[in-house]
Image 1 (cartoon, rainbow over the protein chains, first blue to last red):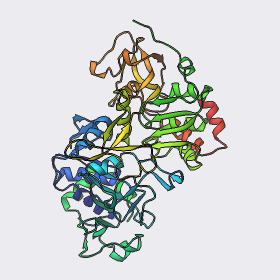
Image 2: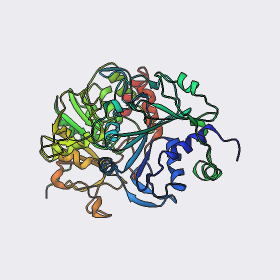
Image 3: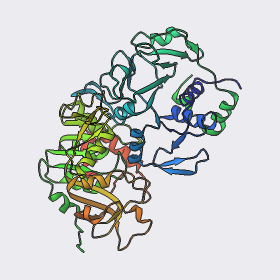
Image 4: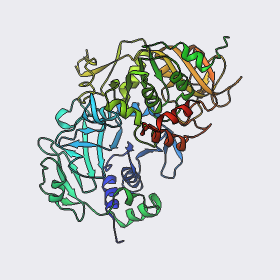
Length: 237
Length: 265
């Protein structure tokens, strides 16, 4: 298959977040992470659990296999068998994330959603982030409000910030001081461009190119998961 | 058995200046909007409002009712941000206690169990504690010695919730997919009021859907359409057009008075 779009590369990169997850609740926020989680379940991770975004767990065939209202989601958060992929208005070099407010919390220049579940997610189970517009305003030296907890503030036995997938690259924190590193750049993107769109110096050794989706994955994305092509509106070429 | 039927105005007549009011539902889902509207019309002020917030939070901020807002988020779901809540925050018009969603639930549970606090891991390392210095941590007395957040009880003077069905004695039933936290709001409150789409003599459906029993309820208001433009499935879904109208008017101080007057009816 040809003409693979950037959005499709991002979907496959999000699917790879769940490699090895097994019987874990995947909680993807937003379109691209949701397509990624569904793709993972149809390929490498058939045991993943996925909700309908409301209170039901659905199989790949969209039949109800479980009941998971919000209160039970909190139980899973605390129990730990969950991998959430959250958005981020800001994320910094140690993986702190902000979805609360821009500026001073007492009188923000821009109020956002609030802490939501980010503080609890990040101290309880694996967390990744999806950034559809990789820019210096999002990838900041230090977040204004710590909603999701990064490595320099990590506490407790279960902190596990895994990766950041953006429209340009896949980033991780597996460096000696857990500062952000470029794991791979998407086809057509240079490491320099990723650095230019980031407000802090990235570790960039042994950077590879993000893999292309396989023919099987493309078929699933294009005909089963997102036949209307919403993905290309979220991540333009 | 007692007949607890009353009007929305009678419910809010008991809400005095400075009280702490918990509002059930979640975001823009099953919010007790008929009761909130009655509160908007009432003279009560300086309220502490405790909510998984949607337009209830925005409207009460718009009306100047809120001294302090306790929340994990405020969102209209299909519209990410509530304009009135944003304005209240960005002008520092209200005090806030902004919590992790799980801490919020834990605070309600502590209040319902008459405990001063319950431990939770959520909040550690984040700025929740930095911006709420009244929150303390506690160390496990066991061998692990782990430090945890001691989430204080979120005690409520009044709880307002909206369910699908109720009887006149205060037993109440949700028919949608999610109970949200309405039972916990009631257990955390001194006075508990449920509005419902319909008052029934007997309940249809599995008994497990009977979320509230009459021990947990002091007043029942029959309010068809009582969740306003928020969703109340299976009776009705969210009125996206009216919610958009609210959000558009709320973003424009000149358009707001006309909308607000019409909205209150």
